[in-house]
Image 1 (cartoon, one colour):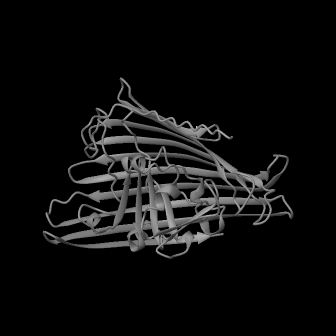
Image 2 (cartoon, helix red, strand yellow; image 1 turned 90 degrees about the vertical axis):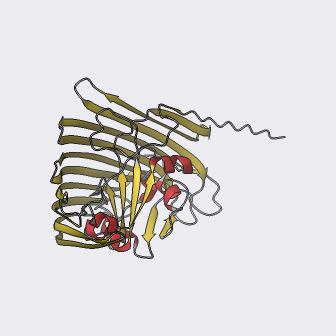
Image 3 (cartoon, rainbow, N blue to C red; image 1 turned 135 degrees about the vertical axis):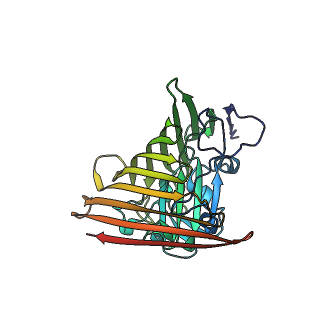
Length: 386
């Protein structure tokens, strides 16, 4: 007789109150726990109301029990999710039936698509979301003002400070478990420092149909967030983000003798936010890289290596309307990407290239009457790929 004992552990400690969280204020210097509300890029007071977006909050993610992006996006209408196997396997998202590379993926409004992949496609199977504070989904034309890669829409991950300290652990054996934690401290000199971390292990199924082995995945995420009010009107924000995912892959649809992938992403982002009676201004500097390799399952040989890097500078101004019916905003963005690929497996091949894009954008919103708003959005990009 086989006796199976399953133990489920769930521990959560936090400082949140029983009351519903209020929207975060721009000048939250006391670090009051709140609900993150991010403003859509290339919008102003009235034109923002014309953008159709789906917001998934941190509490929504917790309530759903989601661990990776696949768990979340499968619940969103208009998104078709295709994963080649269990967690950690290659995953594509098709927005409203368009091509998978027509969905732009961002962190805090800055594109993070991997330029070492064909057409800059994003692999959602590598993204686990315990350290993500909010997800915004723009379908169709609602994402077009983000740039030339958002033909079908855009997905924006928000990574701001979470002022609710917490820790949780769950699992049912040594190969299937998850741990995550969040801690925020306000220093004596006014710095808001936040660290989020999570690890996930999953090994439940084979990558191929009717397989005899379980292919696993291990994921690690770390966020370091910092905020400092330089004065009442000027705020500095910084983000250091790391995501590493190792996943087992099978060699073909019939062979379970395969390889494993090691996919790492490093990101640094810093911004200055200035708010006055007349305008809201943002200047962002962003850098990220992908270091992705595929090795024999025993780790004796590297089969493929992909590397890409991206640098972005973005500035935007939103004019606070003095007229009760009119608002506008404008900005510019410069992006430079470069990537390399080297095959060391059954054949030898390599390539490298770069992409640069200079974009200018603007928007206008006009309040026709109490329940009607007319919005205009424009963007022009000089996009070059080598």
